[in-house]
Amino acid sequence: MGKNKLRKFKEVEENPLVLQYPFGVLRESGFPLKGRWHEEFFHNDKPIVLELGCGKGEYTVGLAQQFPDKNFIGIDIKGARIWSGATAALRADMKNVAFVRTSIEWLESFFAPGEVAEIWITFPDPQMKKVNKRLTGTRFVEMYRRVLAPGGLIHLKTDSPFLYTYTTMMAAHNGLEVVSDTADLYATIAPDDPILNIRTHYEQQWLDRGLTIKYFAFHPGTAPALAEPPGADDIEPDTYRSYSRGYIECPQMLDSESKDQ
Image (cartoon, rainbow, N blue to C red; front, side):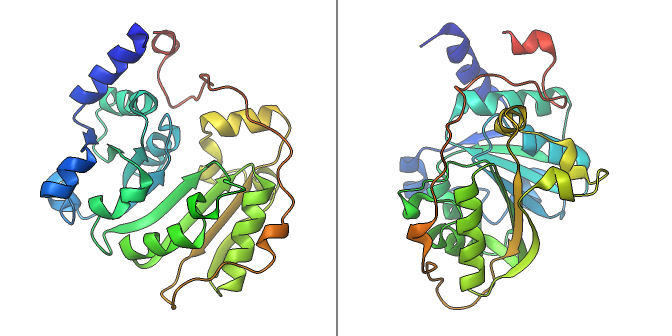
């Protein structure tokens, strides 16, 4: 493991905005902030918004800057990725940002029922062959229901035609209320919409390649168990691959000197 990665791991461990709890600790004693995020971490009653699979944290930090009336928590399993957003937020002395290093599978270990107002899913792996790992699959959406407050909202931004098509089919089949739906975000959303001012590492990749960004927002509802949509297995798979992981500049992140460290 390189020295830079080791340094980042150490800085993540020391960053007060990053919370890391191994599964063994969660199983034995639980997460102390579960159900107490407002009182004991943010010290306010503003809505809590999650970014799942936050990567470098561009969207978590960007949303927190755009919406100071909400609290934002980025979740990712990779500490070296979280370092960028957590470091930027700490340097900016942001009070409405946190990061949790964990698997999304354990979401309910960190949040009590109804504790979350919104969930953002930004450019996840579409998991074309593994519906149980698909972050907009019925298994995960049912889990989101359990931590979301009544009227909670789920946002998906993706470059994947497969994942976008699947998610729209899943919502339609289960009668979920759709709030926004576009297969080409930058062609249809008003230029002054704040969500256009934030671009993640992967989003910039897709835009540089001339690909369209899809955006889909919906309420997961409270109806009986969700069902997989018929015909989902026939959705045409994506035919392109992502670039290798590298830093793509985002204006709300670290300065150029920090990027090269």
